[in-house]
Image (cartoon, rainbow, N blue to C red; front, side):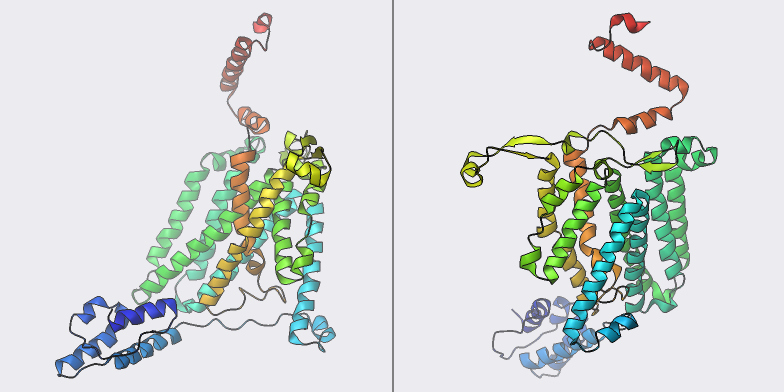
Length: 455
């Protein structure tokens, strides 16, 4: 293998060449087999050959190393984060080492965040939706700001304005779909909203198309490549933040328990990863799910009552949240001493959720860590002292949200009579009558209704 290709491989794997150096003649064909970034070194080697001199392998590798270092130095740095620790905490912990000071700051603010989270849960589903939306906007802001600083996009026309415009467009599309799906009866009673719902997708596409055209019109000759970098950066950020937060809200509509158990699983794993892994690793999430499954407030789907203009969580619990008796396998009876056990079916599903949170969820954090290393930053932002940015706390949650949504649609969700009734109520009277006659004929054929009721 020629020295130049061996050097490229070493750059990719971050390992030094292991084979001892020797001499090597580099011909003109070398420039055709090297990457563009090595073009300067290849040209120098070819030039040496033209003058009858021999280019040795160590000389060539030295030139390539210089070029590699020059490229590394071209990677822009993000300005260091500012210490946003409250002054009262800074004074109280001034006598501690940096390690213990960070430990106490993280611990105190973690308890504060958990307390606020419990308060929002108490305030109801609507406040949780606003919380998810706020976190989404903040995460988007943190990632876009990194791109803005890393690529020195200060002179790009309309970059930040277009980024926020695309965020508005995508949110309008996703949340408009949610409104049409869950609040159909409410919308049908408001004539001014009927037009927006009926042509919602066309309006969403028109809004996005306007932003796309504005981007094309903003292209400047000397910034072409950078502008397309940032266009892609914005869209990938939208995919990560908006899509995932929309799935979180979809999970919340299935019942608050599908929101709380996954989040709690990831939180417990985060705590176990940072503090006393052995002790907190025993957090009894199955017992936690047992507690939640007993209350309608957590297990009932979130519905909007147009009569009272409020969200309600009242229902007859599904079989998933009704206590059942299970037989203990023969192999475990001698160990446990039980022949049967009473538990909620949801507790079996909580095992699957906890397993994903423990084994796969951390890869969201690994991905975020790799992203930060790529741009030489410690945290996404300095929003929360000791923790970094909002994105630093929710990198695993986004991956978990997608899994929960896929899990519900694949193994849990069935026909929803309430949603079907809402769709029937928005039909025209003739269509409703046709559905009624068809359903009545079907029930008579099945023997559920008596023929005498055909009237």
